[in-house]
Image (cartoon, rainbow, N blue to C red; front, side, top):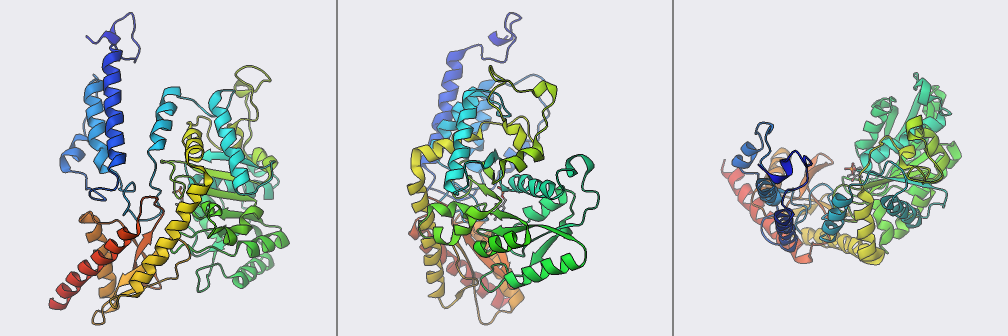
Length: 489
Ligand SMILES: *Cc1c(COP(=O)(O)O)cnc(C)c1O
């Protein structure tokens, strides 16, 4: 019988702390080994069938103990998405840092709940909120909340917009078919329409405004849409701009949207999931001046600031509107001036969750260890790398750039004069799958003007210019092989 199972001490603590310490050190070593070797080897490994099988086991009635558990955890390490590798270019993923391992150890040890109350972790979160206000030049009265990501940050921000528009009666009465409508561009991430759905407005209440040749929202079309809705008796309440759209990285004219929102009395929300971090970069800052005029901003620390998953943030200019949207303190959550129930207002008053983990520490640690200068320089470098990739592609006769490089995303394709458009689409899909399967690189795909594009997003502090040379070479190699095969069939 395990010593921890004796009737005298039926807790979940180890019976043998020395053994525990050895296993914990073993895990830490394995984790550091993985981080140290992040540049090496394949980008992505398919999960072996035996591992998938072993994760279909029955619910354990008798535990298997720590040593067996540690072994199973360690075995998982090679099977991540691949975003710790310098040639991971898919979707928009941050690459994480070794430093965050240390923060996460402390997070697990403290096991803090940040719904509220007065304890050390809360001051770390308050520090992060203050830093976010500084970062985006929001007033000292602005409020913020650390969340899992931009998707939920968007729901929170747009609930504030919705409830403020309905004088907060929607909190008790529901939206009752109030004809609220909002606006964004066709390039905006799907999380905005999803937020409209979740908030009971319906995804169709989000008008998708066309974009110009730089993939930015067409301001004239936006004005027309607002006027039409007003004429037809609907109530425009919000306009959502994007700082870094997911497809090609476009940045809307945020200053123009801010002007229009002020003129029309609309809530101005910005999805800055990765692009908002550009305020740290000398190269991007001039294009993001409109951010500081937003009523709310949703963004992620886990993308271009490389905090390990997950860590997002919602910043709201009006603390009052934010609190009136969510605050609801029943007797058992009553605050106090002193003791553990002090420290008001609590985070639970700014979002839907009561129990919340200590994400603040890894965010704080990242900023504290590296500082904004270095993080900003790495963002600039990623933009230079995307521009460099576009040059390399343009210099090749059998490749073409499909969209202007606005920031850190380059969309291009392998081209061949003898292949039809559907054939080229299939071929470029296959190139991306081959790059992934062969472990060479992990771009994703998107569609640009009906053409399948190899989409390379660089939010990766480990990427070097030679990684992009290798990518172009390999796209050329795989493309030529596939084109030859297509010609033969
Ligand atoms: C990633 C992303 C989102 C969604 O953010 P999550 O953190 O994944 O919830 C929204 N908008 C843009 C532009 C994104 O890149």
